[in-house]
Amino acid sequence: MSHNLPRISFSSFIRPPSSFISVSLRLLFLSTMDSQFADLLDFAARIGIEVRHAHLGGNATGLAQTKNKRILVIDLDATPLDQLHQTARALARIPQLDTEYLRPDLRQLLEDWTHE
Image (cartoon, rainbow, N blue to C red):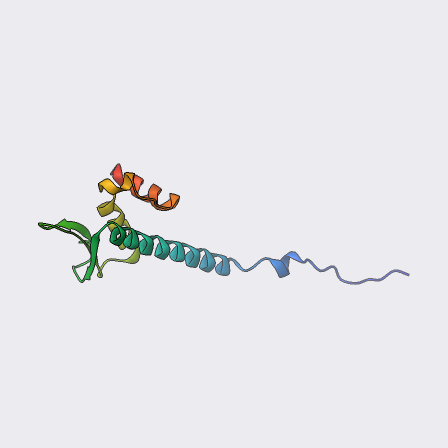
């Protein structure tokens, strides 16, 4: 007895639409970026750098040295990606990088900015 049932491709059930994939990848990227940024700020605080946030026009995140303390100023007008890159650039040359533990992805991010 032969059954003439239609063939069903299960790949159409398993494969999400391409728009879902691009949104998922974007969310993963943003989540990773947020984690890196938060961990860089934690690292700065751990080594005695005061972290401040201010509206400075979008391109002014940086590390300042006063008489007896270092201050990392985060520009709230910058995009999240720019805040991450500007913070990494500011922290890339501090001496504590050689003695403090950092996750490998954070260390790589800072080392990439060391050569800029």
